[in-house]
Image (cartoon, rainbow, N blue to C red):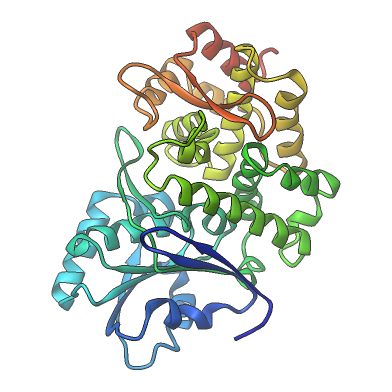
Length: 372
């Protein structure tokens, strides 16, 4: 195995490693362990060749290909049910395992399939996108969507390993790389301002898949997530008023409303960028966040090409009343009370409960580019 590998250990009841580096796919068998005899490989049709490459070194292991639709279309109960049927027909037992190869949607639904088959079988994630590496694949959250919203059905099921092969980013479309930076920047605002400094120092460097700057912000973002999930795996809350795992949903309440309202045409990282601009303004209006830090959100995000306002078409598609209704069924809501993760200052996350509708609407106007 190569020397240029960073290992981040995720402790807890089901410990595992996140491995970051170039050419790390040879560790799939290590993460699976020696006793697995059948492996179901969940992947989009478009990544069939890569999925074959990922499992090529597994020796005598019996392989079952579970081909998924691309993107969010994979995250449905029907897709999961079809996968369960395949596992049943193949005679999958608790000693067998799942490997996911794909972006965040693939790891979400593949993890959910693994979590629910026989109440949980081993799963190894091989994220192929920046978003998958820094967000979806780490931390054990799995989920599928319903007509009411995103990720409303799911479970916590920690992987046996996560392998982030940076070589896979070289062929990633630039739009997908940019979108993934939304989650990276999020980690900078909620926990590690050094990420923001690196991005602000040279925004073009983090857009280069081979740059040391991109690798550093990837590793820093993963470490932020590792630290959070070790302290609060099942989102029960942190100590001393810290939101705990909810902090990883910074910007996501609005983001999920944008995704749902546009039929998931907006990439997740792009929606998160819009959501962070929104929640920063909401915190500013509530007197929780200073003007400069609120404005910094749009400045950093725009510097790497992420959207910071709804263009006219999206604004027309997303009337405030519809967005508000979707946000009310967000997982962080309690009864009829909306709750948002906000900042009381840089890397000082907290919860804003039950903001006024005037502030909710005024922040949305800013997101629409109407006023500030």
